Image (cartoon, rainbow, N blue to C red; front, side, top):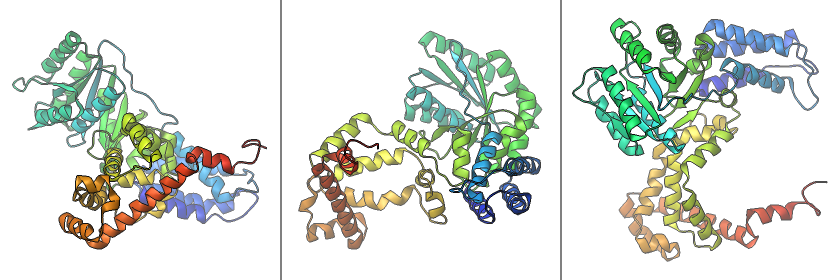
Length: 446
């Protein structure tokens, strides 16, 4: 989402000249370029001006350390101001009451139902008993969509398809949750327009009657500055507790993510990418600022991995690597685990420096398909014993997978190189032992 903004900000920092101190003269043109980049990214003009004025004020007269260039110092100041602009620190959702009730609101097509499923999945992973409630009584197939998502994540969905009273459905669902011991109820409501007074009254009534511990407003990031204006109108009627930004993997300029917190004065609590139920992250303003400035987000990447990787499977793979028995079945298993982590391009963008390096490259979730096709065209014996795959077998695998013999050979070579590296690490006693050999005598410190 922030590719173009990151590129323009990077160019702006490179224009900063001079050494020793940042002065009004050498910072003026850079700040102007930063402001232009933010406005191009669909950030509200007043917000862009305010934040760049603060950047300039902070930068003026700061001493530049010998090891830090003026450009690097301005990057740090910009990161600090962007972090403040987006809220400063993460804000958790409130889960009070027995059960806790979370009310989901937003415009038509903003991704509320998908988010409801993702939130249910996240809460379940946190060990909570969750009930999803289908209160979108207007959109065709909305109830069925939520039921399908509920089945995917193993969370019960409460629905009354014949009932056309959203408040009655929600009230009955809460009674059912109390009876069945569900600790958290997530209520998916119908999408509405801010100008639709009748629909707005319905959700106001829902909030008043249910007294939710948390009311979330779901915003489609791709609507840009319009999303900010809509959020403001909704908040005046609903006084919601937090914002959810969806479709952050789309082709959007990102202005909503940067300025919505400042304009509405309500925290962004979650960001959502893609359709997979695992693709939901708690919003961290500092991490988002780092990503905007091309610094990556390693912490979020690690958290995604911890959520997605099966611990028992990881132990099994580790044992096979130590025994030099890693095969194509294991490799396929690891691919499946990586795919659970989310959109590939999004993951690469979390690695420091990789966002800029991959600029313009077409990377999507289909990137693994040729590899999977080749492996799945192998017999069970070939997957378990890769060494038996000779020229004749490679030809058959290429024909069966619809790939070329060159692609099969490349995969075999890469897999062989990977196994050699694993074997070498085992000889050295593993990565930890290898690192200790590189340390000076007496430990890692002098």
